[in-house]
Image 1 (spheres, one colour):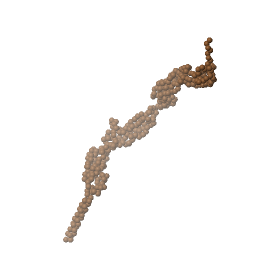
Image 2 (cartoon, helix red, strand yellow):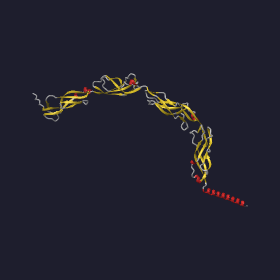
Image 3 (cartoon, helix red, strand yellow):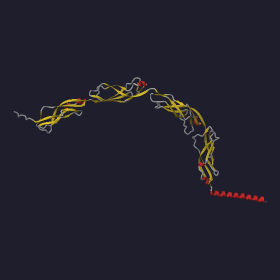
Image 4 (spheres, helix red, strand yellow):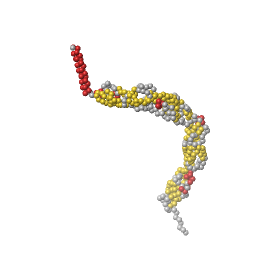
Length: 411
């Protein structure tokens, strides 16, 4: 009887505890009810089998997760609290659908829905091929230099990546620029992959790499001939008109490039033109003439140069003796004494002096307002506009003015 009573007391205790737990859960759920939330996150692709890869060109997948959790638990949850992943350890090449698994950060969280629950993934075989390297020569070395055959080291590269891309690759190209090169070249260059038609195979963002990433290319540059820039010297023959002189020479171009073996160029410091005849020239000349090319050399261009010969009239001094005339003498007066002579020296171009009219050269004494008497007066010399006075003698003279004698009456 006693044992029965004890069993009854235990049962009542268990029931009471259960009721207390239920009551606690009920009260707690009322105070901290479950709520539903949705999060979006990226999907991690893990455990890709050896020899396979997910091409980088595939868009990064995302998943939307719908969960239920108590309010206080949900308050601390973020999308980064979850991890969505696809396990590919049993995957094969090709396109297939794979289940998305979600790792929950708290046991109080209940997973309601995963959208999408599966995602398509295309796996490709990882392929490796060895392909030859081809050096593409771009441009050319300067005139007088020669580039040898380029050497690529290594002569082959290994291309590793998705089979769909690697199978298209037929070779690797290296661009070698020769413009302006006058010394040996030795440098590392990146490669460009091309297909059997010679078209570039795009590898950007497709998971393709080459080993090594760069190729060292060597090429020898040797100088075959040299060149030298020298001035052009005009060669004139004949004499210009006696009234002119050569005032200047111009050559266009003034210098030319002479090409030849180094020993031939050592003796070349100037290039002469063919002769330009200036006999009796009386005006500025312009002539197109060829060059005298020294032996064992050449001038690539130009074949002819333009020579300009600038002439100026020759400036000379010319003496003259001219009578002095008196002007502006008042009526009833006369100059006593003999006629005076002015000795002058005129400066000017020989052509102007030769063509000058002697009547235009005058020496005068102005007698304005003077009465009978003796005076010292300045001699003024006037010349044509092309001439200038160098000197004159005398600069002044003594003038005697007297009344005119009356004529005797007729008989």
